[in-house]
Length: 403
Image 1 (cartoon, helix red, strand yellow):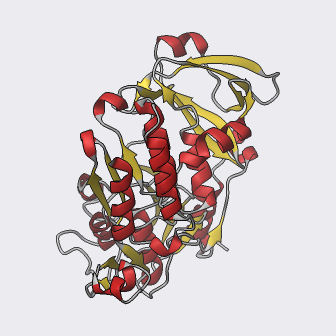
Image 2: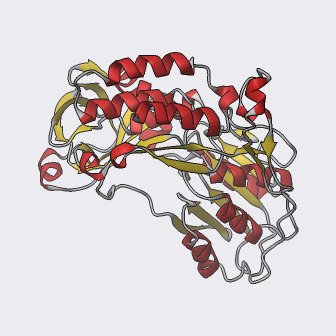
């Protein structure tokens, strides 16, 4: 029942059906065959994730019921990809970590005796939904240590200049727990020359708008602004527009959206699918916020392959508004509003049900918003603690050109 519901809801409600390269009908048949086999809930969860990953939508997900989420966990290690190699960037202290003391910036060479690249490719990547290869890989690295709670992982790690060593860690932080290494949704810092850096990691709550207003009741002391969206992965376009409305001193065009409009008669006429027609209102224009003074000074936005959802809408509107330069990597290519669909026994599935385009009509789903200045951090940058995208943004604000 769960498999057929996922198939049907995606077939008639997923907004990017034209980008699905898999044979969705064959996937249904294969998964129905697998579903009748005796299997644990964890195994069923992983198989259902593989099905949903075929949508190639970075906002798609299978949400397991709470009892199962408590059984799936990962160790409190923050793992990030640089040039497709996994590095331990940080860890949250617990009794085990205080003993193990995993070195920050250590590269993970192997997991359970399997080379890290092979482990990611074979055990993790097939379950990861994403619209671009770069986003898919970085997501896989982030979740590469997930598994049954309480089980032990044997890692082979290496710190630059040292010999490889073994490291044993336990999957202890479940999907029901707050992830202790999440960045704050909103934070700021000041750089010399009156440059303010605003880092947004989530647009899921309107509190991010209120925090911007509290931090900058006006922008009298700001000579240049860097908006860092490199870790912004979720949220609502409405909040993205409200943020940009504080950072523009004239009206701007927001992204356009449409949603599939199913017409049963089209099946009788043998037309391809329900997305033959679309519903979408006139996007209009967004005016600068009247309750706060806007910022109209020089500005740069930082982006990465992880930048997705509403943050990509902000990027697209920012570019059309001509407010400044976008620096970093192409974004994740996974815009759209997400709808959740209930499945039996408290399971659910979610995916994008609106199709978003730039104000000029340009599609960026599946390819991402391209930066004006391409800057991809290297392994050497990670090991040295360098932030080349931030450095290029500062150069742009100083000179007026980041190229």
